[in-house]
Image (cartoon, rainbow, N blue to C red; front, side, top):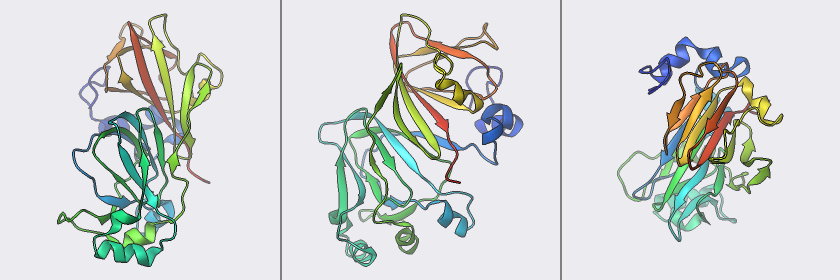
Length: 279
């Protein structure tokens, strides 16, 4: 629900319904908001699961699959995630491990540190353990096939999970790339994520201070404040700056026009934009 601005009190669904093109941009308007952004802070092991790609999702009547990424907002010493199946296993071995409760032995574990970016390609078997706080960006899709649940009595989707599973995917840690005043964390089909470090020296004009950034003015931009707090200024409504606190999110519509951020101290902002999927 919008907390500030002229649409305060409206849900994202209502804003999307009434202002689709102005919100998303001409090339990104569709039947739903293109991305979901969540903060995950598991207190126990989450189930081992896999998501379908677009082709499999559409085979079963859904509009899209689920490719996602995780940015580590925090990680305790020794934290790790399961990302993929160890080499040498095949689908029958995975099925047997599910049935005899030994699937953990086949999972490829990846150590995680604060500020790591992890790409989770559709078809990648994965699981999240306690000890991490993750900013998750994903295609707007609720399809999850649960392979294994550590003895908890929830439904498993063994056949579909094995159909969705791919033994080799592009999943893994993504090295950050410095680009002028910001850091590119990931740039793939469906989404791009950048990190901006701000200080009190002046406004930071994220979308328009550099010509490369101007290409994102045609689509919605999602700003997540991962540290500190910022004030968002829009040229279209200069009398109504918006304060965005730590772990809060601001959505900048495609038709918002020029805008900038300022902070009284220091702040870190994660900017997420949708991208078109494979053609």
